[in-house]
Length: 250
Image 1 (tube, rainbow, N blue to C red):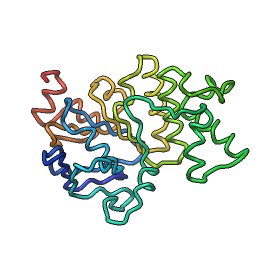
Image 2: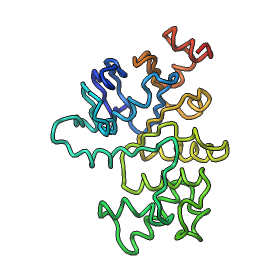
Image 3: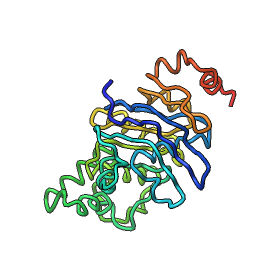
């Protein structure tokens, strides 16, 4: 499998406490990679290191390398805004902007000068369609986004992220705040989108990982314990800690 993201000897410290320990792995292109592990093991830290989101905190120290398309994103002078455009982040809870449904999707395109006028209308429809939301909102595009249900808001945030034309989608437990039907909508969208995007998801729900994952990364206490194709990992994990986690021992 062709690697889209390569992590090399990555270490992360929060206020002097080490959260990630010498992580090295490759994320395959146009696949869904799921990062699994118990709470507090470093899953979200690893995910956010991939688009330099961790740097929003002044108490964080990062060493090592993260390559996207062969470029080390931690090289001094790298355009962080461009990195975050290339690697979109879908958070645990949806955060629609305080504006209309239409303007939520159009916002990033306006900032980056991607589309205008009639092209903007077509683009908004396209990305709402990709997120599986167009048919539900096409007659009320100019109502506040906050009028949507929480599941619809999460799909709106997905559409907003897709609209700035990323290459990679990062999801930090993107269905954890949703009801089962809304979570299923998001899962179906992600399965469709992997044809066009590389997707990296954090989850602690083993059933969800088995439904979605093409590739699995298992972490424990800040360490990468094991990784590999999903079928191999779930059917024949090599490490005792991985087997214990899959069998529900912790």
